[in-house]
Length: 314
Image (cartoon, rainbow, N blue to C red; front, side):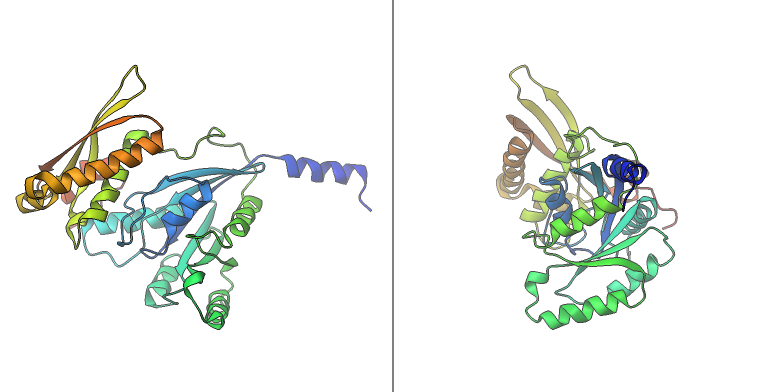
């Protein structure tokens, strides 16, 4: 039987505000950005079928009862080859260290390969509570393989819980969300109740345009580009004028981004404008330019603008 004092304590605990910062990590293309967008109920981070599209940790914010969940969508963890790669991986691991909880996303359709083993090794010394989300379960026909993966992932006892989900169609996501809300530490909310992201609109606008570059351009070229919002003007009629620059490293890349008669950059701009209009719920006048900035991938200022630490060394 619960006495009045105990009942009062339980009631107080249930009504206490909670706020948890949750780092979502995993290999490239594991579905991290899709999960974050699904969790917050809107688009706060870009999605592409190409790997390594997320470059900087972006935050998506949602509320579950008395808990505010702040999801940190981190770059994919992989074996870095370039300076930018190293900065992205460092950012992902930094997010795992600084979060209250870590969700490790694993593509169930690919199975538990060497990449997953390397990621688990990289985070083995991080003491943040770990939850594993076995994603894309809808693409695995043999459910016995899923059970085998869960057993293997649970064997070392590192993960507090393993969830089977599909970030794309929402299967299992609500259960994961409820668990994270339950595990979020007691504390005040860090953001206003209606906020969906802490990213400034000009940053989000640049990310949307960068997403369209990945959609319309192929091979390695998108990885050699970066987008900056260079001007933003609000008008009395509620519309906004946005100027952006797509920076590439070489003149030959500029020609490809522009396309014949400027057709490619027009497609990129038109697609970005359409999505930004819907996202911001206002008329958007978008002007996109293309410029060469040689070796921008070695410029510390570009890293600061992307919210990344500039790695030392070559």
